[in-house]
Length: 234
Image (cartoon, rainbow, N blue to C red; front, side, top):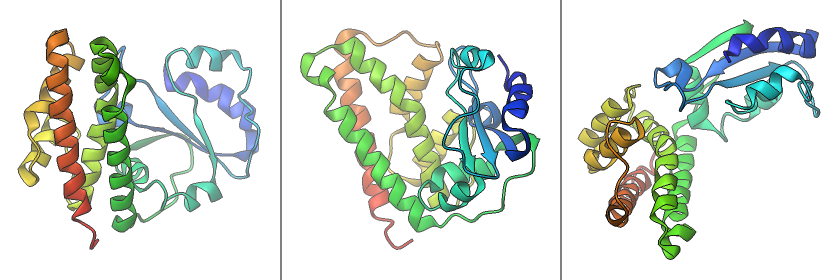
């Protein structure tokens, strides 16, 4: 199901309160993978809505089988969230597609807010992985699955670090990893190997390989945390 298939329903449900329908994420940035990626939609409204007009619509039920629910934000909420979600707004600023309605409002992202968000999210990812129940139970299948699931988020945080360094991030994941490796102390092979597995070019790791993969992954996350932590003067 394509995003354009939702437009008539969105128009009918939101009517004159509709400001814009925006496609963002991998479908626009160039990293979309069929059967793995999904479509991300932002619906901007003129006035606040505490209830969702799309609730119960048949086409939405079909949409949710493959994609996350569309975000529904009013313009005031959008503008007041820039300092809280700086990375998401930078990504949105860099690559999006207006499917319907007006262009996005102009906005500026401050790097000190971005640095704080990156450190917070990197530390959270590190702790989630290190303290995952599968680490104690020894369930390698669940653990490698969790590592693979975390990979797109980590690659997005890499993009954020490149923004901090005032570099234009590569959209291609492999090129982005190599770009960051040239500017920091991370070892690119840890992430590149995981991407090869995710894209089906390599088989899933064997049970006995998972602990060393986790250790290497955590080591690189710690390296990223230290790097961002030192950029406090932004």
